Image 1 (cartoon, rainbow, N blue to C red):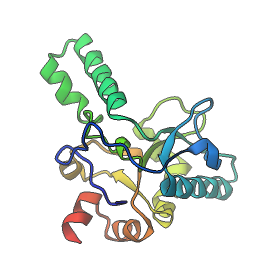
Image 2 (cartoon, one colour):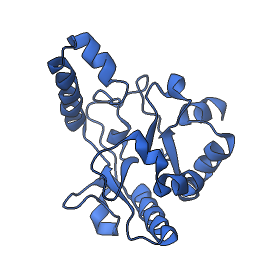
Image 3 (cartoon, rainbow, N blue to C red):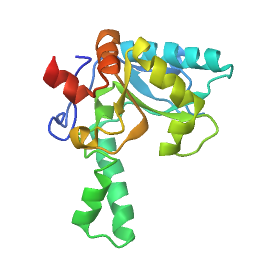
Image 4 (cartoon, rainbow, N blue to C red):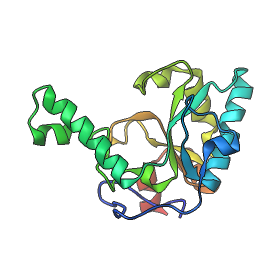
Length: 197
């Protein structure tokens, strides 16, 4: 389902793998140089149309690129552990490190990336995901247009108590055009949409 809810209270199983994954390179989607990312086919095609339209309207070739898409359970497990170990190395206890890391990263099974329906976007020329993405022309365009392609800003500002994640202006989730339009018009997050409708 395009409205599959994946969060800390609704984890995917260790063996969940989405069907219909395709390479974003195969559909001409702008991605980080030398990288290959997979996404569910409908989401991949919509994302490609969205990012190409973004470039056309801003008058720049691929101003936003994909830096992350589908992640397996094992990949997410290793990634989360890396974030935890970085914090432990800075002096946090294991428990403190896990709690702090979980504000911006998901434990294995709890990541939307495992669904094959979401991506992280980076402005071309930037090296790291940052809240400063919200100051870009790309972000301004996405705020007004992403829903037309079935995408939503998954972790919006002011919804942290509901999503349980920090604000992430780079993280976009495919839910389909009809659902995305309602979420955009009602200014709600996915959890609120599912609870309400």
